[in-house]
Amino acid sequence: MTKNFIKIITAAAFIGTALGIGALVLFPHDFLQPQRGREIKQTRVIIPQALSEELRDGDNMAEQIAYEESLRGKAALDEGEILLTLLAEDFDGDMQEEQILAYRNLLEIESPIYVTYVDFDEKNQEYKRIWSSPTAATRPGTLSLYAQDLVGDRGACILVSGMNGQGEHTLTVFRKNNFPRENFPPEKIPVSGEPFAKIAELWIDGMISVQTTERTQAYRLGIAKGQSFPIAAYGHDRESSNILDQIEIIYAYDSAKGLYEQEKITRIPGTQTEQRRLRELLSGDPGVFENFIDGLWYYISPQGTLDNRQYIYFDTPNREIIFYGDEAQQIFTWQNSSATRYGLYLASQNISVSTLRRFLDIELESLDSIRIKVFEDVRLKIGVNAPWNGSYRKVELRQNRSMPDAPPLSAYIDARYEGAIGSITFSPDGTYTLQTGGAVQKGWYAFFRVNDQELLEVRGEGPGALTRGNSRETYLVEGTYNPEKAGDNPLRENLSLLRVRLGAGGIRDLHERAVSLSLAGSSAPDF
Image (cartoon, rainbow, N blue to C red; front, side, top):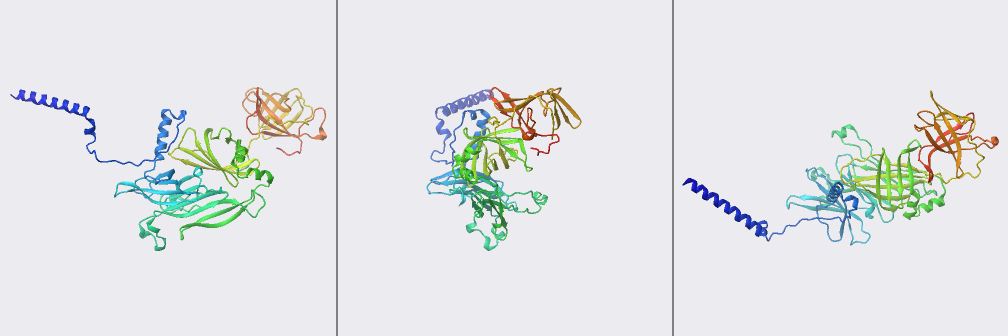
């Protein structure tokens, strides 16, 4: 009896399971949507972005998805409002992420760029816009949004930098109010309990930067407050006739007023150079300055020497920028540029890491040098290297230089030159001897010309040549002759040897530092 009962129960369970599966297959809609009349809404802002072919592989596609996710606002904007960028961070210490959205209202003429604060509403269980405020910036392509402890109290400050319609740099700073309200004196309670208060709004026809310094160990350990960072603004000195003369205005934080106020003004003299050419470059047409910076620029160290280990190459026709530093090369797409009072403000994006944007404030320092301030905008936390801020000098290619008045050239000379590399003796039999400290290097040499340019070829005897570890090297030769010593075989008072490569395309500049030598016994100045 018991066995028959078990068989009946097992058969019934099997039949019931089969009928359930069949009903689920035939009528899935009724099973999966029991609450037919309930509508589920989800706010989503999509940033249209075309993917290039190189971004369609697996790794880059995942990176692109992460990038788009980082640009998705948690609250919907109103009609006519376009999201430009956003900043996601825990601003109130509740272990939950809030957002600062930067947007523009297309329904307003000459609309400023606004920022709005998005926080989670516990009562309605949704994200809501809590507060909004305009900024001084109006050009979306120049916008940079980031957070920083500017005051030194470990509170968040929102910094919005960009440009306005007059080509001026702007900076608007909002400070997070630290509620509860009883922490505020009556005169400092924000209107309607606003979560942010504007503490600075600057605009100038030059550059604006925050002068950050290393704070004390007590601040880093959370024991004491840190010093506030000053803000420096650089603009045209209207009292000077030199276009490159500037004034520096320092703004310091006044804790009593809760505002940044002007502290001091300093005049900075610029390079005295040909003013007509300067007016052409700084005419307000970005194309003119773009053509000027096209090419290779080397970093100038604080000691005034060229550093060939760090350079920036502006490829204006192909709209690319190449950064080379720390033995690593980074290529950025040149997105857009705007003319400024002293040069160009340029926005770019890394071709491999779409989350990495770089803004360059380029100012004309002289007719062959520029000053660059770089702002990083990283959506995802990745490592960035090499400090790019500083002065750069343009590299002039030398293969087109000619020597119309060059005297006759002999392949071999009889002379000794001295320089930083040591002492080198050229013998009339075509051999040379290089003495560097206690080391002696020997080899063969020959002077010759290619298209009116003088070159020197050296072949080292053993492991090493004139300055490097190669057995054969070619140098472009420049220097000054002494007219009083001119004859059938005149000697140069100075030699500047620049290593080049000779090929079918002609002379190729390798962009290395030149070797400077002076004729032994000569009082002529070294290069």
